Image (tube, rainbow, N blue to C red; front, side, top):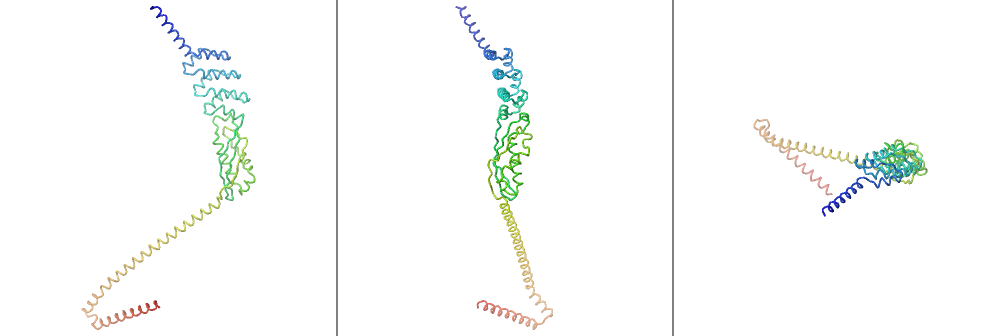
Length: 327
């Protein structure tokens, strides 16, 4: 009985070891590769496991490349995988380039992929050019009329400039700048509406694809519309600004006049205060003159009579003026 249990334990241990062996060593993948014509050693697959490389992400693309007639070293694919590249996309790009007779070496394709660009899409765009549509671009002709244009740019990927070349955003920005320059140099917006192809010719001749990852094949103006009268609006805004400046200056002059008036009123009040103060000193001066004998009593009474006569004449003239106003 004890021997039977020992045999069962040995059998279970053997099964576990076999399962671990087939789990760690992808024998099935090796068999698939062998019958696909890919010569790869079991030790190489074990080394991939030890280097934490998923074997099927290397072997399956290599099988695909072999069937397509490409000669690729497994070490190159593994190195590209460890560098963070997409091995499957890389192989698909190499196959597509071979079918399209585009010279694309493994090193260049790997560099393009590691640079963050989709190398397969680049090959496809190189074979089948894509169309980049710009947003609506507003420009103003010399007559002050705004022209709104939209362009379609047909580009083809330049494999040689994919690494380090500018992207679609640069193409769109340069085309927009060319449209603004062309419209701005036109004497009238009617010239642009009559010959929209003049924009395409002028912009295309500027060599806008220099330093980019694309080659511009054509620039077509998809839509041209007339926008606002910018010249008239600018004149209106200038007139409004001039009006506000004039109003501000008039308000400044009014404030200065008010301040001057207040200053004059203050001076008049000060003078009146001085007069009142002087008048209050008159009785004191008269009494002093009487005591000192500088004037006599009759002189004083004569002066009072003159003052009374003056007051009476002033009152009569005031009454006469009031009667005239009432009539």
